[in-house]
Image 1: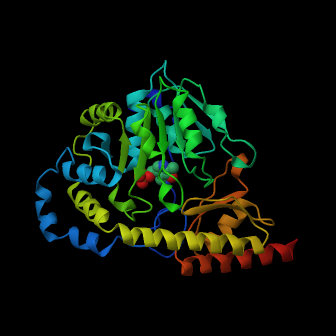
Image 2 (image 1 turned 60 degrees about the vertical axis):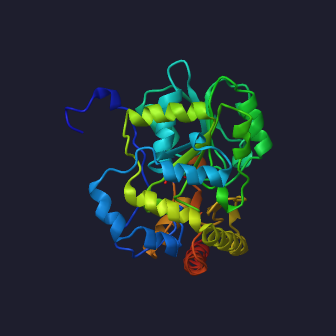
Image 3 (image 1 turned 90 degrees about the vertical axis):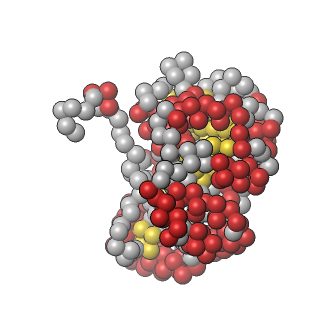
Length: 358
Ligand code: PMP
């Protein structure tokens, strides 16, 4: 840090993204990307003609894309907000809805960016521990009278709560915003989106990064009552009015035209998830039930950090956190069947060695 950086960030601990090796040597199961490329329609939409127009700014309103998303989800364009990844969306939401008198609450354990944004913006926040087995208890959030962020399904656990539980949380916090981060909703979960018709304090966030194979394009979106969307627009136009670039916009429009392709990929991922979980169970692993494109799993013989390092040495990247509550666990993105077979082979090798050493 230079001597010019404001001291108000001295205590800020920045988010640490998963490793992104540039040499492609690894079987990469560490950042919950899709193993499948964007659809052929997307590849042809991001074409020379679109690239030639990069000298011009994109449409700041993202009109075409908002209309298409609105049609798809049965809402109006005034109910749709676009962001440069759902990370930007989360940042805008904390900026828009929190202040000293309106703290934000989220689970401890959940997505690591939530506390970072609260710290960056110097907003008070409460971390609510998950219950036994990493279960999120809806009652812990009812009547809190704080802004609330819940990833559903949760990350890195993969567990989901019922839409009826979400409704209870939204209903009992009528004067605060409840943000449901549905980054992983399209791998078997049930979206709470229909509730936005009934509650003006519910903000549903989704992303093109996982199910829609567009992590590199950076596109997130929110669906909510038009009041909340207008609030987010105000923050956007005060931060970065051209937050969606032309190429991502073209890619996203084409993505929405090839929904069947993505639904088929999601089905494959769900099959590979079941397969991987079953194979790990044969080795004695404990794996939480997951409705996402990753699993959270614990090895019976090797500590999480050792398993992570053993896998990395063998060319497989997974995610491990050195936090006491979860240091035994690994988050493993579900890839293709071939990738999961390589992962499983390396796990078997490590478990065998650990057993031999014991
Ligand atoms: N929410 C959750 C729960 C996530 O795991 C992630 C990505 N890892 C995001 C939001 C952000 O996704 P993106 O910015 O790529 O849309």
